[in-house]
Length: 368
Ligand code: DP6
Image (tube, rainbow, N blue to C red; front, side, top):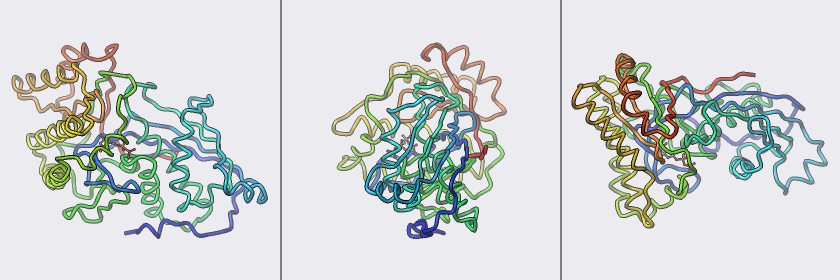
């Protein structure tokens, strides 16, 4: 396993002048949630997620080496990059990338020697309320690692993926779980070998057939800008009255869900996943200042799911991100029946009847 020091790039000759790479990286949905962090993007508790398949960011990174004198005179200045979103310059995204570059500079000192064009797009509708930071940072981290691999061709595949996840984490915590599939653990947990606070790892145990190709239908309840960002929410876990119990609970839930993913007990799965979602939002409601990200329609949907599950004994459940949208999770075998229920009863609670059908996926893919 690699430590933080292993991720510092220390070759000083940069032989690659110009080129481009392109990667796609998916979003992910946490089953046990990351909420609360320490300095340097270290999570306060371990988390586990399903990697998604359809909700992706596709990013092309073109790079050209600056001449040495320009590079030196610019050393103390900003990184040099242009940012395009769906082919058009997008200045609003630049500060986030700038901050990301600053955080990873010590591990990727070659960045200041190049000018970059970052050309990015999402497969899901813009401002759908789906956070693109996980898929976006993961796709960018993979591109940066492709450049690093070109500079250091001896790099192993394992180092490539672990450092990509390590870098993505510094962009956005949950992004480190978007490099690999199908189930990823991030954060040190005594029951999971190789787990680390520094990067996500693939869940190594054999996943029960019941969870193969698990479905996630994302109901877009509210597409507006969130009132409180995740970063602010994480911060409010410092001095939170229930923080200690919450972090302990996440460790326990991770031990339980590990067993469930192996033994296929969907009933237990539902209990853990729904409790995690409601606990996440309970943490928001009990922060100081407190806030609520669920909307009335979020609760309507939850109640309909509970009623349908009780009446039909269908193993459908929900989880929530830091927002009002609802992720409806269910086994592939029950797909038709549940999609019908979603269309008949839940779509009416979505903004403009919008929803996205997704499934568990395999992680980032190189396109160029
Ligand atoms: C509720 O990864 O978006 O989705 O590290 O500040 O970028 P930053 O936060 P972010 O937080 C995600 C929180 C969550 C739960 C989860 O994905 O585990």
